[in-house]
Image 1 (cartoon, rainbow, N blue to C red):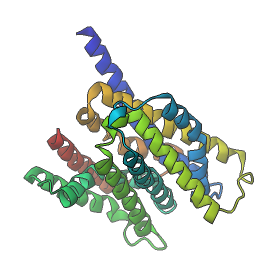
Image 2 (cartoon, one colour; image 1 turned 30 degrees about the horizontal axis):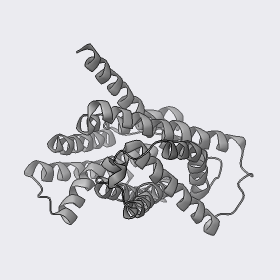
Image 3 (cartoon, rainbow, N blue to C red; image 1 turned 45 degrees about the vertical axis):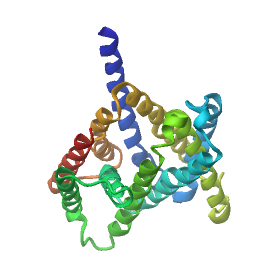
Length: 298
C-alpha cells in the first residue's frame, strides 16, 4: 500500500515537472529570437545538443519485444520521427516568430482533439456526443482566445497560428500512427529513435537552407539552446515517460492542462507578455474541452 502511494506520488511529481519543463520551451525560443537567430539554426542547436543523450538511450536499451520487430518497423520509425519531431518542431519554431508564447501553447494544447478527429477520419472510430461537444467547445475557446488579436495592424498572428496548428496536426498524426510501435520498442527507446531521425532531418534541412554561420551568435544563444535541449526536451521526455509508467496515460493527460497555464506565467515573468481577461477565459474553455476528450477516452 505504502509503496503504491509512494509510486503515485513520484508519478505526480514527474508529471508536473515534465509538463512545466516542456512548456518552458516556448519561452526559451522567444528569448533566443531576441538575438536575431533564425528558426532553422535555433532548431538545429536544440536537436544537436540533445542528440548524444538520445543516442546513448537508443543503443543502450533493447526493444521490449525484439522478436516482433521487423525491418518495416524501422521505416515507420523514420516516417513518424519525420512527422512528430521534425515537422512538428519546425512548424512550432516558425510559428513562434509571429505569435505570443502563451497563444502558441494553447493551440498546441488542442492536439488531443485532433487525435480524436484523425482517428475518426482514418480509422472510422465513431465520435460520441461528448467528444463532438468537446471538440466544438475547444475550438470556440480558441476563437475567444484570439479575439483580441484579430485585426491588429501589422500583426501576423494568423500566419503564426496556422503554423502552430500545423505543428499540432503533425504531432497528433505521429501519436495516432505510432501507437502500435511503442509496445514493441518501449517508450524511451522509441522516443530516442524518433528524436535521432528528427535530428538527421534538421541537419539535412540546414545543409540545404542554412547560412552556415553557426559560430557567429552571442554566447547567450548557445546557453539558451543548451537549456532548451536539456531542460525542455531531454529531461521532460524522460519525466513524462516515468509519469505515464506510474500513473497511466489517461491520468497523466489530466496534468497536461498545466502546460498553457505555466507558459502564460513564464511569458508574463520573462517576456512581459500580457493576457486579457477575454483571452484567459478562452484558455479556460479550451482546457475544459480537452479535459472532456481525455476523460471520455479514459
